[in-house]
Length: 229
Image (cartoon, rainbow, N blue to C red; front, side, top):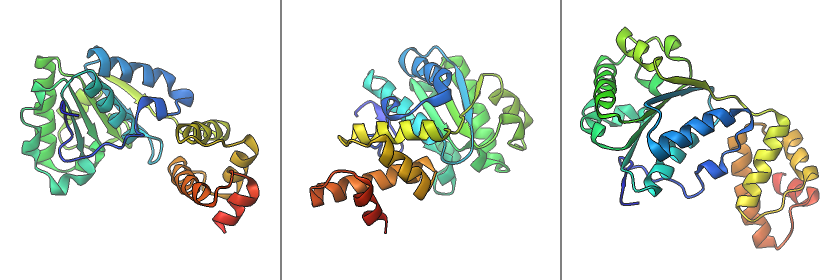
């Protein structure tokens, strides 16, 4: 995508809003779509535990905005040791900036100050920011209190984990996206016998897809049991 500036990051083709199973997060999805499409939300802060899909949502927002001919940036702060706070300079000239894992820079004065100044410049430029963290802004423990308050001024959403029935819907949606048929019976078998983490289940589906194509077999419980063992 010529209009995206992912800072050396390559987005996966299967990361989009269409491949995110909303569950009880439908309102969040609605606001993220609005931010990506028409820049109507100046700041969205999302928080939640690992594996609930925060990174997926931020990358999906970037993908969506880029398809609308907008220039975007995705900043993975979990990799801040390999990055420089100076990289945040000038991002206010884009149309959407998504900053992932803000909790990773807690206690890093240079990063906290750089993000604070980006926020101020973004407000002046009417640049939407989407920021994620593991906890609420108030619970981040940032040294720069002004940054803490700014992060809480926008929309703050808790990304709720999926319950078991929603996880079944999520892996079936993922299977359909890959052209696979995953019955309720096989889906429940996976949830009972394998990891309940959605990311791990998605990885298993990818492996099952490849194995079933190679073996020319459908996804049945005997096939899945054989593959897992």
